Image 1 (cartoon, rainbow, N blue to C red):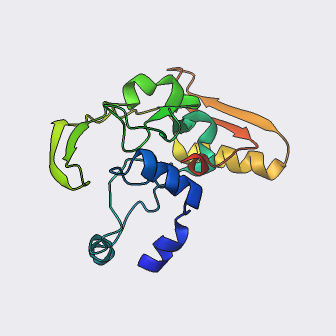
Image 2 (cartoon, rainbow, N blue to C red):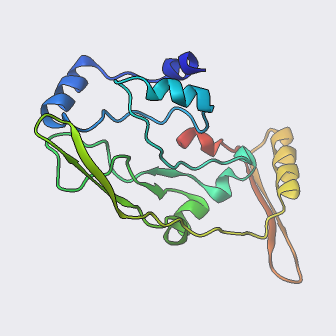
Length: 192
């Protein structure tokens, strides 16, 4: 499993590493997250390596995929990777924001608050101490009136027609939207 994970890592160029080392020698080089879950044995193997640092980061997962992509939307980074000299406060991982759909319109509820961690190094780059300055706070859970089986059925029927189109099913008594599909669709997991 470790070799498969390592193969997924997109390694930086020599120039990128030189620039990073010049300005940010105490900060690990940021890489794209490579796994949502790891076996404990794999984590133990990685922890033994002096050249690798494991950091947990949160990402979105969209298990319903294309059936709800137009509705749910997706997230994107709020800022590019940091370069140049270190600032007084910098995120270890880029923060995310809703870019489309419910992710964007309900961002203020879904986002929560980032935590802050203070890390102190000596002049040789050895970590002296680490403390949690502020714990993160999870965002809210959003519950919709959508029926996933009906949503998937509408998506499948539209896809079988092979023509662009849209479908909306509504509860006439309550006004709740039960399904709202669009074709062609996309997989919002590719934006992670």
